[in-house]
Image (cartoon, rainbow, N blue to C red; front, side, top):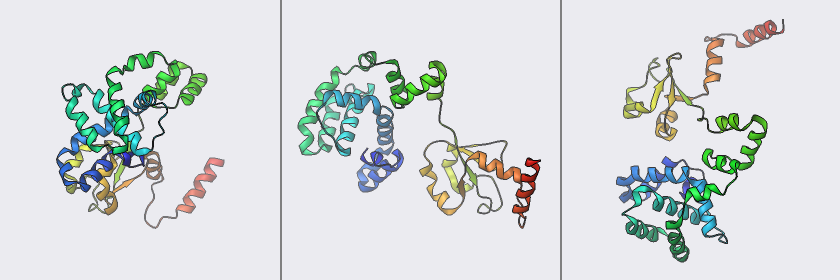
Length: 249
């Protein structure tokens, strides 16, 4: 969680932690699910941390610990595992934070997300559910109206694309065999050979990016290049001048 707070992706953070301690290699999948869940619920977890410890000034490590503690203990799967989870959290907490952690764990059974949300303004509830700042939600409400603003704020992020570099793939635009099971995270764009939509973390493909097999490029730029139809030795400057002249006319 500390690494994520410093800018690393969730998957990178888990892999780094597992590399530093071989005993963690067998629980990487569970650890990633825990980190992803904590990050996803971070906004509402932070509110509870602040309400429970209003005077506490926390650094990155302390805040990460309390977020992780809250998410771990409040999961439905945590029922029946409370003692084990509490023991695990105590074992990773710095000694100076143990008294505050004990107090914080004692506040969790009374935590009620529905009660927390019921006392909020509409814009604050939407901000929590869509992971946007309250001021931005209020601005969108004023500019677009509530319904259209919520549709915009709750929309899924744009898809990410990668392109197969045919020069590195023996002239082919199909996925290289070396990709193996990672191919399951790529969906072909039927209208554009060699372009794929990426599902999940891009860090999984780091080796293919560094070797030149894959290239990142937004789809709009790639389609603009296709429309220009450049050829080896072509005089692109002349073509640009001709296109500009045509537009002006």
